[in-house]
Length: 290
Image (cartoon, rainbow, N blue to C red; front, side):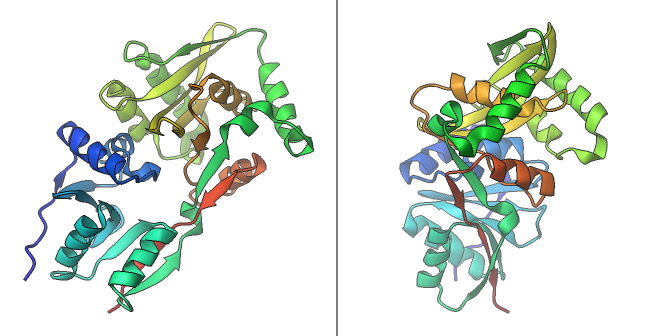
């Protein structure tokens, strides 16, 4: 019989091993970056378990038997799933089409699959989002113009561990203004800001007429893919301008922006779709058949 898996709370000590596995086996889903796992560890009640060349995340906020699909080698993923199946009837979350195929190949007729539209991941072409050429981007150009003209003077600077306190202050102000209507990501954002250097984050701070009004922060999934994890903007109709400035300022190697999911929030979905994503990554959930 398989040994029961032992999970432990995610800590900064897991960073090097988890990132090594993710990068070695080419997992480019933002959820598996250590920056994302660590920032959301408390909200999602994440715990981690390693095999030799794979790891799996328990997602306690979803349920007692809920897990992110394993990350790593095919052999390592199978070891982890076999161990789960020996003791429970798991739900495997955040499956890509390839992950779904893996389960159908190695565990035929053992899982029922549900497409989770709210968790589809939006990918944007960085060059297209900077240049905004053609009639398809007319509304975006207009929104950027409005945002830019909302202040007489804008200034930007890179986020560093030394100025993250100003971004945390923006979070506090943003909560005051949005209340319960805002995304429930402030604790995760504050965690990422407090551990900005350890998590290898990248971001920008914005001032409008001398006042801190916005920041954007994320991490590099690969040198070519940037995960835009957190964006907080004080003031109406400025977010298109802020994002455009960030996209224009990213390292030249970046060709793709991962804008994560819309969580089924109508306004967020409309916003993301209106910016013409290059691709949506389909996400599934696999429920073990009882």
